[in-house]
Image (tube, rainbow, N blue to C red):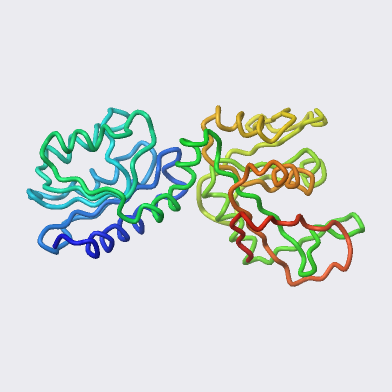
Length: 306
């Protein structure tokens, strides 16, 4: 069956499969693939880990016969040799009749070349099916490629009355155990996690996802005044003065995304710069009554309140 409704149905399945690789394939994009013939799904696959087979190869791996079938994939098939051979060549060799794709690949190594190989081989290509949904799923990859900076998430915990910390210094905890596990899951999904020197000196955070099984983000401390001398050697220790410089450093290190868990000063700097993409707030049931107010969130950025 070849119609827009069917194309969108199978592409949604591609996106669902692709999301299974979140946090495990970086810096590669999230990709899923479905192979269909005569209304029957012949095979499925997704990119499972960095360095492993791409989604198309995983979907085609166990298929003896896919001649004339339609292959659905949410990102343009690669056309170059990297960790694995080109998926576009594999699709041609296996005799697929049609390829339906969600997003063009902005990577200069691929951009347009994958589609070109397919069309030169006589394969029909349909592009831009559920394009917005695909960009949303791979927002880290597209931001990194197109804006040449990491995708930035600002995150903080606040009391029910909007305070980040009590007025009296001391040990305190705003997040619930459920919120804490969620926060640690979020950490596994990003390439880096950043705090400022003030947070480091006060809390000496480990910045690990210890309450959720998943990959460790790169710890980064922003030390603009050079106050720190005991930062662990595996951390990135940045002495930059502006948010733009900070993001340039992370970009040059190949880090596609960063979750900023800094204090009020660092969060305010990112908000003032406008160089961030979304906000996540863990809202506590506690009332503090006074203390350090949480930042004001501009309405033009997505904000998740949990």
